[in-house]
Length: 233
Image 1 (cartoon, rainbow, N blue to C red):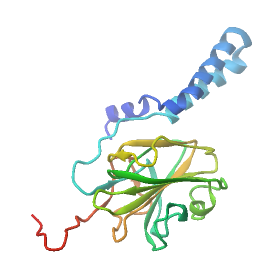
Image 2: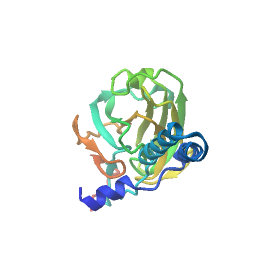
Image 3: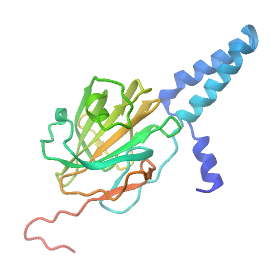
């Protein structure tokens, strides 16, 4: 990554969900500076700087090629394996490939759509706040799960999972919405995980330890479905 790209990432405009925290830090800084002294001013300034960094929302450019499934979040891949999607989505009990991405407090926390399609189901489940890097976090932790129907009829899922520090999951889309690849759909505050369940038969092209860029890194390629009797071009 070039120096200019790094600077654009650090100073990107903040997500609207972060504005109450940012303005709260500014208020604390001004109150300390004008009336209460350094004991409040400096912590207020540091908190504001942290929130500006944490809630940054850089622009992303998804790949133009057909069939690309992009990462739904920034972070590091902590698990790649077969798993059953959350039961509340009604996608059946057949295992499918899952890619789990862990977001540290230093990562961009804006979630993005992995593919274009229609949101068919959104289900919020209350739960625990275990370390999001643990495998059991996908089952036990508080989560918000979305089912997506692709234009060709296949289904996949994205799950926002709260972590040890994260206490708030925000989702800005609703059932029935038509979405595009790389489109912003939510944010998880202060450390979390995002799981991606691929359509049945689709294999991921990423490995544990790989760094993801939400909305840009290709996780898998969707084979083009051809109807019986129709020749491919």
